Image (cartoon, rainbow over all chains, first blue to last red; front, side, top):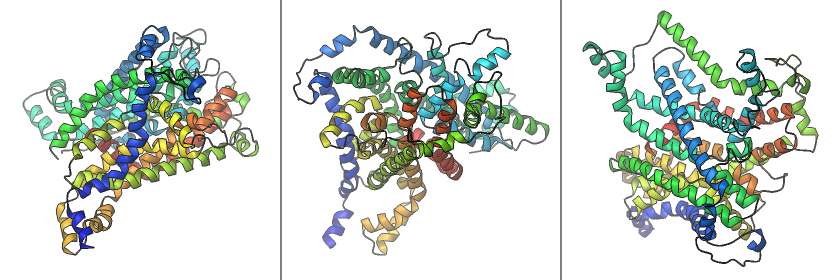
Length: 300
Length: 282
């Protein structure tokens, strides 16, 4: 008994507590990632999956990808989608955070209710925005009509010119609460005395925004943007349900294209090659995120 | 941490009015879905559209229990089971792991932390294909287990990273007092630390549940039988088959939101804590 007790006192006993979670993650995440890399270097399709005859073909899948027009389109789509979403959700989220950090009666309640869009399953959000932007019965077309901004119903999701815009709007809607909450938490850590003394020194609100708020909020802004990038770059459900990548591939992202290769065309190896490109880009940005968080860890 | 002086008088009224307006605009999509689910199919196609149901129609909700086509409540139960399973796995594994990372200084602790941080940001797309092949080999393909196993991989890293902060913030004295009273380290963990970290554990449980509840990719890819699929996959199917039955579709949407709404109403405080802790500090 005392042996067991002594073991638990020892620092390495920590490993025992941590091990189950680690093993689980290695089996269900670590191993799949490695096998995904292997898979992308083979030629596995639905034809040879069950027979187990797979051949190592090196980087051939990746070579094929970079000549594939749809893949290149998905790349640029993913970039456009991510950057536009980040910009708009950040600007709107920041404006709302500044507004809701004023100490008026409803501020707290409204900040809370604002979170709802963030918590809803993406499949539902996709459905909601399909309903709003439907061509014939969509309320967006109706509102634009009654404001005399359009004369004919716009085919939002069935036209390759506008589909991406609608997908971006839907994702910004999800992203706003996330930005607002994190930024407004960051704002509350700035001491009000700073603003008071700046006001005594004759600073106007613009000056104190650029000289106090922005510099002090920088760490929060950095992590909001980096996390926003990570979340947005890998979005899958929303786009898959809204457009499945169409019309004419105009909304295909790396995530949806990977899915299409694996589970619609059954080219498993091609699907994992696309996913690996997505992962590689994500990890490059992820390094910034890791640096920020691990830096905080040093203080612990 | 200072707080601005309370704004009063006319300014307060104006700011409140603006905030309500902003809220109405942002939540309009959900309001519109709710009223669409309560309209008749005829009224939905009416022009100009009505901004509240002139004829109240609750058939879209009721019809789903009766017709065998796509049973909304069956899918709801599937989702519930899958999310519950994923939540249990995540909490049971993450609580001891996060405690170890916060309170023990063992070798490999940093690498472990890095591992959880990386797994937290992985895209579903990377895991779908290899998991699909793996689950086929494990013979859990097309069962609830496949979705449960996959969904738990979202909850675990999130929970570890949040709870680690909770355990780290519990003062050493509390633990040491327990040792003096004759508790072993394991005893102190179970009897002192776990109860104190309860708010954090609740956050993790709630988020692990919600992540699984919102999942489409895993449930849709690993489970083929409509009878076993989660509600998100059910909605997606239904959209393909009855693309314009908006009264039904919006009724599904509303039913799917119910657990989220309940969690929101009862646990708002916890959720904000989870969101800010988890994301900013990691």
